[in-house]
Image 1 (tube, one colour):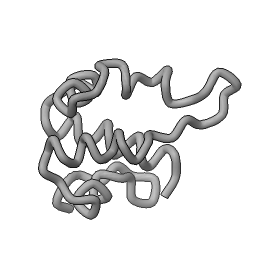
Image 2: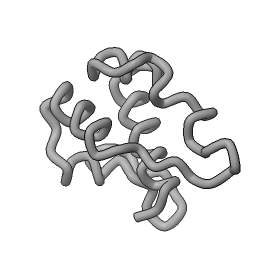
Image 3: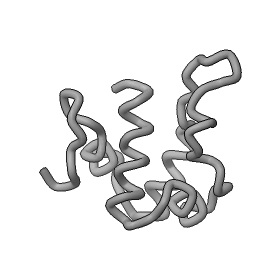
Image 4: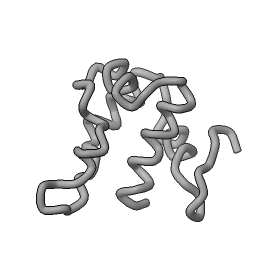
Length: 84
């Protein structure tokens, strides 16, 4: 699992739910800017990983398991669609 895998899972879940990333954040009870691309790296360019709290908020809001979340991560560099 990589930094990009986690962020792509969030992006793919938002698309699956027909939401923007900011819409998914709001739906999950988070600030609308939580998933902005600008927040995916720190000021020095180092990767900023989503927190376990943030991921838990998404999982709880969607009644989704961590295993289901993982199905939205890229597979061998390809975006894996839910249920494949």
